[in-house]
Amino acid sequence: MNNWKSHVLLAALISGSALAMGGATVPAAAQIGGIVHDPRNYAQNILTAARTLEQINNQIAMLQNQATSLMNEARNLQALPVSMLQDLQGQVDRTRQLLGEAQRVAFDVGEIQQAFDSRYKGGAIAAPHAAMVANAEARWNDSVGAFQDAMKVQAGIVTNMGATRQQVGILVGASQSSTGALQAAQAGNQLLALQTQQLTDLAAVMAAQGRAQMLEAARRAAAEAEGRERFRRFRKAD
Image 1 (cartoon, one colour):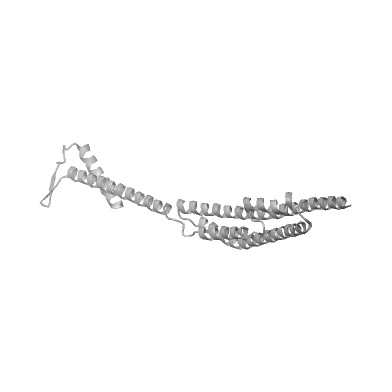
Image 2 (image 1 turned 180 degrees about the vertical axis):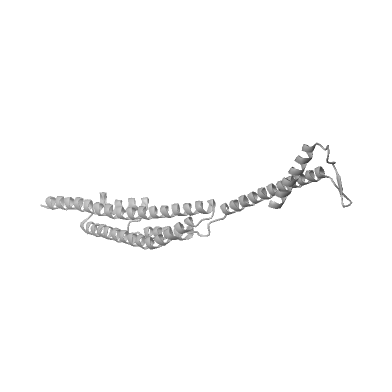
């Protein structure tokens, strides 16, 4: 690069000198050793070569910039090599399975209505003595089973916490070491999915606890109504 710059400078000096002299005393072309040398033509050729070399260098720089841009775009299109989707779905399925194993009174509107009609209100409270005792025992079993179900769901959520901690570490590490926009976005999406799974577990715990509390409250209310019915029958017998 410095060599062609020297030639350009030399050519400029030769050209300038020739113009300054105006060709009055120095001929436009001189014969040296049998070779005709034209200083102005030589200078012009050097300048043309220099401009051509500069254009080539500009094209090379442009191609390098384009190659760098393509490499960056390729990085942005690379997918995240880590996927926690299957693990997260497995955790949600395990929680749903625990809820589906609910004893006595399931998480189903129709079954809840049927259970309350048969054991907690109406004819169940005014049933004969033997049926009244059976209904009271059934209600007690409902409450005990509901509390047991709530504890099982809680245990399942605690088990999921260990896997959740490991998944958070993997996804955060993948996010920090991501090489492009797509990898960073996918890592963020999987962290959101993990948060959704945790919210699902929390909702499951609240549902199981609420079910146990409501069945216990219903049992107490039915026992109170049953006590009043027993007392009425006792007074009537007198």
